[in-house]
Image 1 (tube, rainbow, N blue to C red):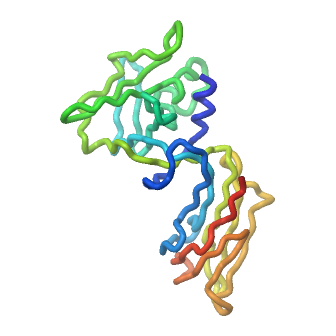
Image 2 (cartoon, helix red, strand yellow):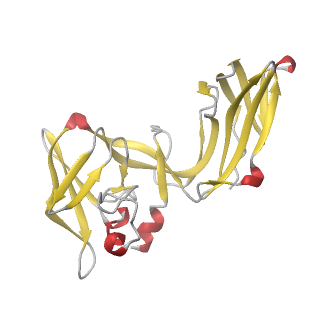
Image 3 (cartoon, rainbow, N blue to C red):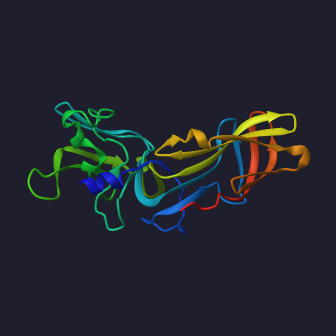
Amino acid sequence: MNKLIVLFALLFSIHIFSESKPLYQNLIDNIPELGKESTVYLGDRMLTQRQGQFKECFVPKRNFVADSKGTGFEFLSNKPVCKIDEDGEYYYANYTLSSNCRGIETVGTCVYFTSASSPVLLIENEIDYELHIGFPKSFGKGFKFNKAYKIKGINKNDLKVDQNWFLYEEDSFQQTIEYSGKSGDILKFIYSEFTAGFARQAFTREFTADLSEGNIGAYKGALFEILEATNSQIKYKIIRHFPETR
C-alpha cells in the first residue's frame, strides 16, 4: 500500500500526447517544444521543465458519480485516471475518488479512500464502458469490487481511453519562466524554481530583455526568440530548453 501511495505522488497532470516518448519511465520533459510558435498572456508560464512519467490513462469528459447509502465516489471531468505500470490491470485517479472524503483524506477512516486504495476497473463493451471501483480486501492481498459502486452504460463519447498523459512528480525539481509585461522596449520575465509544489523564494528572480538590442531572451541556459510582445501577451519560440538537472 505504501508503494502505491509513493507512486501516486505523481499528481497534477498535464496532457501531452506523444507516441515517440517512452511510457512508465522517469524522464525530464520540457514544454513547449523547440521551434514551436507559442503565445501566452501576462502571468502565464512560457517555459517549464519538470520530471515525471508518461502513463496510459482514461479521461472522463464529464463527471461520473457512483453513490450507495450515503457513500459517494466521483470521477472528475478532464482529470486522468491512469495505470501505475505497463502491465497494470487497474487504473488509479490522481485525486481522491471518495466525494465524502475529498479534502479530509487523513481524518478518521477517510485514509482508506485515498486514490491508492481505490483501484478502478475499466470494462469496454460493444457500445459503452463500465467503471468498477475496488477496495482492499479485509484479509489477504488484492481488491474486491462492490456491485453498488459500479457505473454502467457510459457513452463512448464521454470517455477518452488510451490517452498518454504526462504526470509530473509533485516533489521533483521544476524550473519555469513566466511573462511579466512590457515597458517601452523592455520586456520583463520571472524565473522560478519549485520543489514539492512550492516556489523556492531564494530562487525566484526577475530578468529583462531589451528589444532595442535584439529579440533573444536568455536565462539559466534557456533561450527563446521573441516574435511579438505587448504588455498583456507575448508570442515566442523556444530555441533551447533549460539544461537537464538530474
